[in-house]
Length: 153
Image 1 (cartoon, one colour):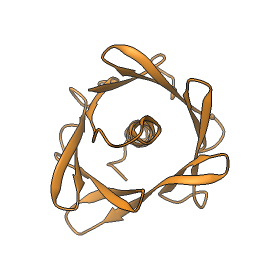
Image 2 (cartoon, rainbow, N blue to C red):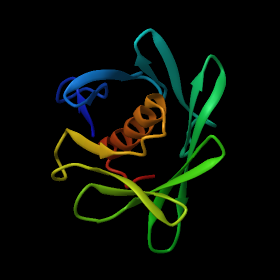
Image 3 (cartoon, one colour):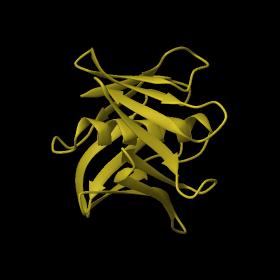
């Protein structure tokens, strides 16, 4: 189980914990929609693609690792994440709580939740086969969008 918690109440930066042990840091720039995931000595870039749209990418040395884009239907907002030619969909489970279901196709593969609407800490159970950088990217996206009072995307 992963947990993401901000450095402090007003911070957009996150510490990612696994079994209460720090495993990654996510830092967002104050002036733009760019960020960085740090795992050990490795730094990954998060950026909007193109800027100003609901589409984000995770890059390692200029090479795109994962891509997230918003999808909307008449009844729900969702986010589709592409990694290694597979698609994962993040769907709001409830309008009144911050709960997200993670699906691969129609199969349930994980969840992301906070205890209540104003809770800062997020818990997540994501597929084991996803690398930590992609899991951190997903958590960074979700917490970033929740901080802007948006649904998943």
